[in-house]
Image (tube, rainbow, N blue to C red):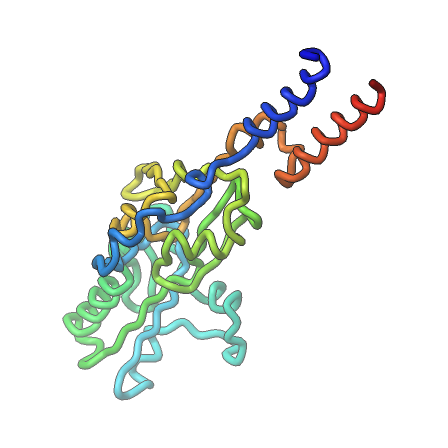
Amino acid sequence: MKKRHLPIILLLLLIVQSCTTRKQTLYLQDLDAYSNSAINYPMTPIQPNDILKIDVGDVNPTVAAPFNRTSSNTSDSSVEMMKLKGYLVSPEGTITMPVLNEIKVVGVTPSNLENIIKDRLVNEGYLVSPTVSVRVLNNKFTILGEVKSPGVINFSEESISLLDAIGLAGDLTYFAVRKDVKLIRESDGKRIVYHIDLTSASWLSDPNFRIRQNDVIVVTPNKVKANSGGLIKDPLQLFSVAASLLTIYLLLR
């Protein structure tokens, strides 16, 4: 009798081992404890390889024209054309504007750069009441691992939340480890790695966990997916294979 029941016992052990508990899959399980908490919107500093769109204006558009880049095809306002006409930040952290020449931009936010350019235009006697607009055109983040649509994703906002980023990637898969999502960020010439537990809401109030330009999110697979070598695409597949093997065994018996 013990030998006859052995396959069934092994099947049950396999199913139990492969199951992911409810606590491992639910997001923000203590969310109510952080209701009405303050939200911080940090400004993202400009980095090398950012592409900036800088517009200088004045009451008299003619006097502001020399400080703006022009194009032979001004009717094309697509994002790709704007990138081609934008200012690419050099590895040294500078851009070169018409008339003003080289400006150090790395480490300052777009709003700070607006004030820097505006002050130079006034203090150097070029314009009296200029308006300056600065925007990063190539905001993007990379998300890899156990998400439905991994890859490089563009966004137009100054920063987005981590939950927004996961949503843009189609959500985490069933096999994702939610208690240790890694956020890799380059800041001030250094690489910083944050470990985030998505089952808790404690990270929501930390401004560091808003996604910035060039961030990388890595979602690791759980033991079941890792041990399968990526062959298992759906949890039901494992149960189906195990049940089929048991059926074959019983028929042969």
